[in-house]
Image (tube, rainbow over all chains, first blue to last red; front, top):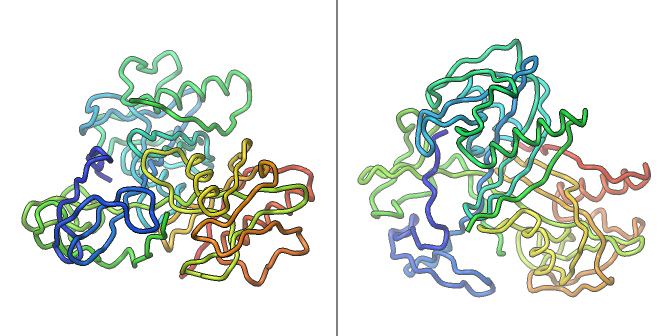
Length: 190
Length: 190
């Protein structure tokens, strides 16, 4: 899917009620502890919650599949196929769908590898790893290029996001130890 | 936090644009594959994505801490403390916050125990387990009662949600095997 533009979660970026078009104010509803977007006309409370980003680190022989981003943010930089989980799917289905959409790639054996909190942008990354089926891939419309990289070839300086760099580094660290594990992490940015 | 009323994710429950108060239509935006709520006036696309519910199974000696729900849905039924993850927190922080809010309880050693997809309501449950600090608990405003239960005392017929029953059963299964593991599951409901 297209990226949701990330807005400052502390600002009242909702101006009008989506139910009655009344004016929205930021107030703490009764029995709540946080400011919410509340309609002054009909009283509807609009909650905002973190989003899950699901993706895959797929390997083929000794190589990892990376996509070059065709869209902002970070257009031109390399990433693992990943994107916002959609309604009515599982996290795993979301990871596989994004991998097909962005990299034309499939896997039959993905497992959760890294769950990483990004609280400053209210996202939780769920990165899976697995084998790339048949070594087959193709750039989707959100990628300008999709390619397999050995460890030495990884464009470390041109990776799109810290969480992607972290995923790849953790994978190689586990590989050295001879055991791919599940990891939990948080990236703190002010 | 208060429960978000669950609306049918297939229906266009957004009528007006929250940016300009224009009329919303359900259309597939260019380059997208799914129908989205799009403003016919300003073109803003409103994405809806799954929510994370975070909670804890805390134990004290041979007992599990359960809360009796004071609010709908399932008022009067028993549950593990859990609720919607908030912006700008980690999943673990969300699980601990909900546990404090609903059960007045703390833990210093929670670990992810069950990640369970509920695609029919676009939720992902992240249930942690750990030890209840000092055996201390107290009903929060969303609970009419909070109590410790041995396995024999668990009110199996009066549990609030399938995912809660699943969490508790998996815990006892692991306990019998002598090893608490991480689990991944999906509950399919039509």
